[in-house]
Image (cartoon, one colour):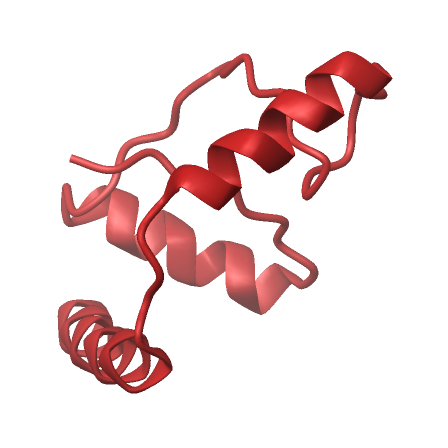
Length: 83
């Protein structure tokens, strides 16, 4: 299971998400506590930002080709589940 935060910018996009929810492919989580500079919300302190950078530097590097192919595979799965 993965928890993701998304910003839906259109009614059509929200309708697609609702369709996935009805098929039990996804669930809505009411509130998730997440402090990340990539997301809107509360500002990070300088110390929290430095910790975020240090953590990111410790993570293994990802192959862009591998990530793209994985995304394409998951995208196809999602599109099949919507139809």
